[in-house]
Each structure stands twice: as structure tokens, then as C-alpha cells.
Image (cartoon, rainbow, N blue to C red; front, side, top):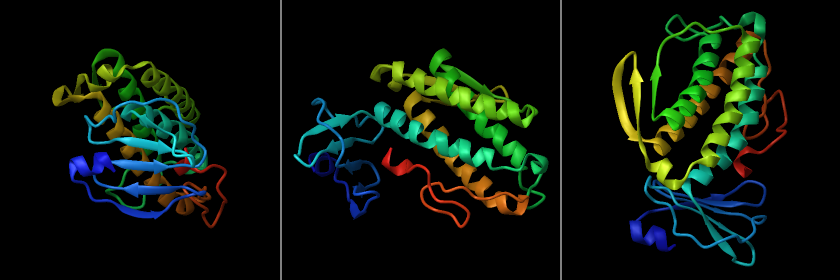
Length: 229
């Protein structure tokens, strides 16, 4: 509770998944788990407003940095992204629910290019978003899988100083952001989750089945539990 008291945070508690309980707050997430093991003592990472604490039954505790938490979440979400993408009927990728909506094909390509943007911003300190035509669906799936793996490996090699280093994001040649890398790649992950939600709403009208993501759907039972990491 020390971090919460220090930052004056409010939290609300709710039962977690698979025996876990989670405290949710606007600026800190505490994950109480039964299967973690004590590792080390470290000051909570709060530069980006998130500190993550893991505690065992015996009250052993170690602090996970924001960067380490990102790696954990990215690894948990990647198989669920791929399951949703593979559920799309390849012969109906130009489906869109309204004229103003993007097609399923366009959404998949956006999600895939977001991974490359994250890799580039870590490697080069900058990235530029340009409109481009989607390649064939199998190629997009291959790139999504490869770039997901490359991104995790890149973040695992970063130091906390790298995580805080500012980088430039350009859109069609114009500088849009000059922010720390950590918050940028978190934002990309959240946006990919948003687009995955779009695709799950597209699936049944396209003739596909909705996979289980964070719980069962009418079409499937979960193979993994992303919330549990």
C-alpha cells in the first residue's frame, strides 16, 4: 500500500481470474498471485505512472518494472491476437459493417504495421506511419507472428534508461509525438487490443467463429488465459 498512499491513489478490488485477485487504480496495478516466486527487491517503477507488485502466499515479494510487465502482457496477448486473426475467413476480408468503417483486411494490416513501428522506434529512436497497401493475408499473418517475436526480444534487451528515452513518431512526414518509448509501445498494444475487438465484432457477419479471448465465447472455450499471463 505504500505506493498507493504515496501517490494518493484510490483502488477498487474485485475477484481475479484463476485464483488471483487484482487491485485496479488509475495509476498503479497490483497483481496478487499464488504462483509467483520471490526474486529480488527493487524500487517500484513509477516514471510512467505504473508500479506492479507480485506477492506469494508466504508474502515473499518482488517488484516488476513497467518494461518487464509490458513483456509479460505482450507474451500473453500474442497467441490471442493470432487466434483472432486466423479465425478471419480469407475469402471475405473486404467485409466492413458500414461505408465509413475499415475493412477487415485494413484492420489486420494496421495491427501488423503497429508492431513494426514499435520495433523501429526501439531500434532507431523514430518511426514514420505511411499509408500502404496490405499484402496477401498469409503474408500479413506471417509478419504479425515474426514481428511480435522480434518486438518482445527487442524490449527484453532494453534497459530502463532505454525505456525512458524519448523517440519521434511521424505521420505522413509530420512529427506528431516526441515521447518516451515505454508509453508509446504501451499505447500501440492497447490500440491493437482495440482493433482485435473490432475484428471479433466482424467475425460472425463474415461467416467466421469468434474465438475465446479473455473468456469463453458462444463459439469457443478459452485455450489460454491472457489475464493470468
